Length: 308
Image (cartoon, rainbow, N blue to C red; front, side, top):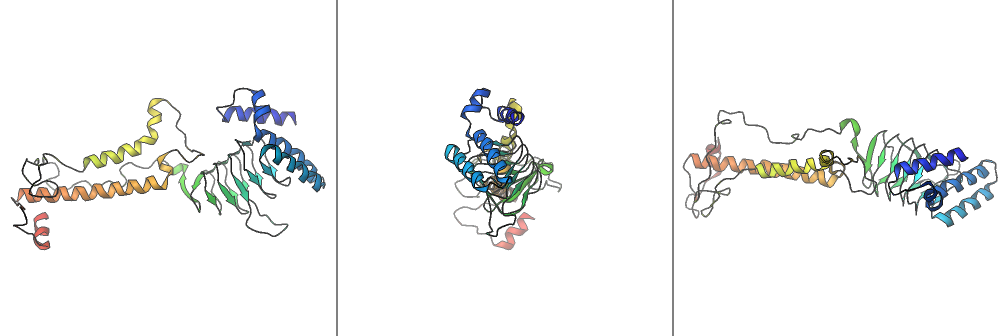
């Protein structure tokens, strides 16, 4: 028992940067208190003293705000950080070295007695704040569950699951994606390497209007913005600060956020459209075309011939 207690304190010192001493952890960490009380309640439960186990678990809930059913199996070096509002069901299994943040529910979706109703977390799983894992399935070893995710199906080992309902968005072997994955194709015609004429003041601008005064324009700023957004996640590597792979509070790498990925796709699409407009205006400039106050309207066939 004392060996397990020393392991629990050591793992908290390792994982929580706010922990300053073993005395502080032993006296001020409700997650540690909940684990200690659960071990006593679980010992009573497996001996068949179910009421005593439930009552001991109830005392632990009153003291810590963490509810762990005495029938649940909790492994070694499990760290419940902050812990308030954590609920772990009767048939749940938490493997060694798991980390669980506040507001997490390891719950069930069935009401049948004697069945596996609650999830199994394998070794090294991290469950972010407010996540709900519901059902008798398995979350694979070293997987990550994002903040406020609702997981209702198995998660493969080493994967990250986010969203409601949760979906796997990242495998560690697929982490390194090329930055130019969706970039516009390079020009292959004979004018690809020739210098392009600059826009002259008074000439047609990006929209070829009569009042345009742009002196130089291209889609490059949008491409640079996209590239800078993708490099933000790895900026901490250049400064020497640790680069976190997973943020349990839902604020971390942009690669883990579906909204950021959607914005990247929109920026890519905008860059492609701007590049096409740029080539169109250059073709019109080379052919000496001018559009002034609608005096020279262009039909679709004529415009296509100019671009070709």
